[in-house]
Structure formats: structure tokens, C-alpha cells
Image: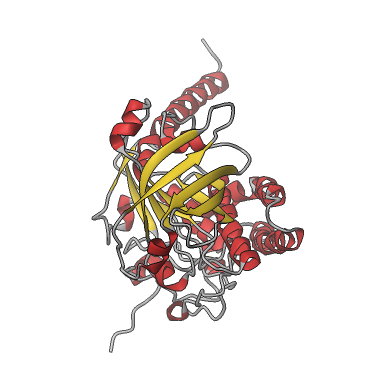
Length: 380
């Protein structure tokens, strides 16, 4: 007969194996992810991808409509270890606030489904967002663009529930010859359908006001902590502002995926305004907008972020397109976050939620239920 301690240990090992397997099933997207042949994957490479976009620039810049019509364009680029690719596409200005605030608008690139299919690529991943330099001031415009690009890269490092991005160097050419061509940095954002397929889920477009219990709590806390890391308050999970909502196929749990970080303190865009309705007085002031969680759960989130500190700083350091002065500024901003996390750890991970919310204890994002943020409503 086996000793009791051995039997107990054996049972614990079996239980750990079961839990590990369940973890793989539930969080499969956190591990190896399926890759597909798409126009975005064709463009992915380490160094900035050089592209040429030829279109009627005057027509593009003259549009003042909220959703302008598409216009024809020719996009060409050379992937690594491949021949030059040329696509006849349609483009239009996009965005809401940025469409009004920017000298040069962000763009949507619309590829031909039939052409993608003929070239052996998934035809339904035919639309890509292109984030542009926004401001005509070359130095300022590219600084802010690169800051936001790095924010997306940091989100990718934190976990898989994030859009992939590709830095590009674009040569804009006016097909009419009336405007001078110019070259600027930009970055492409992964197609939303491709993101959902990669993470094995579906987008829920009508998911506003979903109950907190419908969400994967770990993934949701990771998302809230990332937004806190970059100092972004311009989002709301309850009303899906600057959020894509994924429902995982394996368990039906909801996961928020953030985008549009130009109002984050990390980016510090000149047109960004503080979220005064949340108590924010300056763009670089952090406000934690995660729903309530117990110390043990938040401790796991913080410890994950602590393991990522070196990698996040390396992403900043390695983005040499941004000047050393601005890279140093971003490092210092990230390090203030880590100083806070180290204080929480040194305090024994006690009363974490209260600590994170101490400067803004009554801040509730648009559409949020006060009780989910431990805010008591006053009865009159």
C-alpha cells in the first residue's frame, strides 16, 4: 500500500495536469496561434516596409464628409525575399475625431477580394486601416505616430488579445501631378476579421452594456492594466468606445481588444483633451478604469506585467525611427507605472484595487455600472 503522503502528492499532480489541460483549452489563443496567408501577413516584416501610394491627393484631402466615398489608388511594395507587388485598390479617409483634427487623415485601404483570392490570399481580409502622420509638421507628426505605433507593439507583448501592426514608410504620389509627392511613416493595423479568426472567436458588434460576468476576468484585467500603463482614459468597455469585443468560441467568454491610443499620455497628442468627466486634469495622468477584482486576481495581473518590463523597454529602445530624446521620455513614463507596481508588491499585494483607484475613486467609464467599480450611488 502506498504511503498517504505519496497518494496525496500523486492526486495533486493529477489535479495540476487536469488544470493545465483546461488552461490550454480555455486560453488556447494565448499560446500558438494559427497563421493564414493574408495581405497583412504578406506585408509583415521587422524593418519598416517601404510602400508607394499613388492616387489623386487633392481629391483625398479635399473631402470633408464623415464617411467619404472610395477613390482609386495604386499601392506597391516589396516584401522581404519577394518580388515587388502592385495592387489596384480603393482608399478613403476614415476616422471621426481625427478626420476633423488631422491635416492628413488616416486611411482605409480596400483591396479587391477577387484579386486577393487569385493570389492565394484570404479574400475576406480585404480591408486594412492605415494610421498616418496626421500633422503636416513632419517632426511632430511622425513623433506622435511612432509613439502610438509603439503603444500597439507594447500591447502585442503583453498578450495575444491585441491588433498586430506593421510600420511602413510611404511615398505618396499625386497621380494628377498637381501636388508634390512626399514620404512619411505610417502603420497598418491587422484586419478585424483576421484578428478574430487568429484568436478563435467572433466580433460582437452589439455587445454594449454586457454584464461584467460575461467577460473573461483575467483578459479584461490585463486590458484595463495595459490602458493604465499607457495612460489612456479614452475608452469604455461598457459602451465599446475604442474597443472591439471578441467572444471566444471555446467558452463564449467576452474579451475586450483596445485600439486608437492617440489620447493616451504615452502618445501625448497635441489635440488630445483630458477626460475631465473622470477627474483627469492632464493627459499624462493615469486613471484605472478596470472593474473591481480581488487582490489575488490583480496580483496575478501585476506579476505578469512585472515579467514584461524588460521586454517593453526593449521595444521602445529598438524603435530607432523615434529620436533618443523621445524614446527616453517614453521609458520614463513606463517606469513611473512600474514604480507604482513595485510599491504594491512591496506592500504585500493588499488593497490593490483601492490603491489603483485612490486618486479617482469615483471614476466610472461611460455606460458603466457604478457598483462594478465599487462606487456607491447617492440617493436623494
